[in-house]
Image 1 (spheres, rainbow, N blue to C red):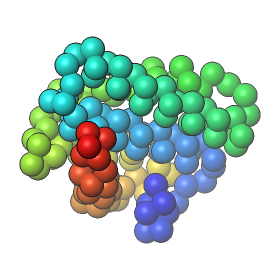
Image 2: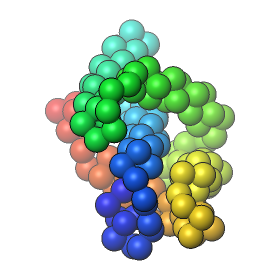
Image 3: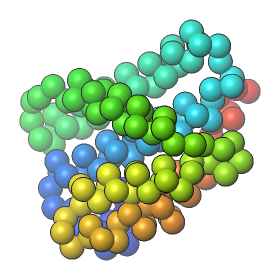
Length: 148
C-alpha cells in the first residue's frame, strides 16, 4: 500500500485506503494458504488459516473503528475474504513461480476498482509487475520461519 502512494497512486479517504489494504491482506492470506498447504493436515490448516484470518480481521476492524467510526467491519472483511478466496482458488499457483499471471491480473483488476479515476488504468500493471513480486518476496522469506 505504501509503495502505491510512493509511486504517486492517489488515495483520497481513509475508507478507500483501508479497502485497498483489505484487498492486499486477502491476497496475502490466500498466498500464505497456498504456500503452507503441504505443511498441514486439513484440521491443522483450517485452524491455522482461521487464526490468521481472525487476527487480521481484528486488527483491520480496530483500525477502521479508529479512522472511520463504529461498524461491523470484521464480518464485512471475512465475507469479502471468503468471496475472494473462492475466486482466487480458480487460478493456478506454482510453488516456484507463485501466483499465475491470471491470478495477478485478477488482483490488479480488483485494486483498479478501488482506486480513483486518475489511477485506474495503471494500478493493475503496478500490482502485477511490482506489488505481487514484493508480497511474494516477503512471504518467501517469512513463511518458512513458521515451521522452524
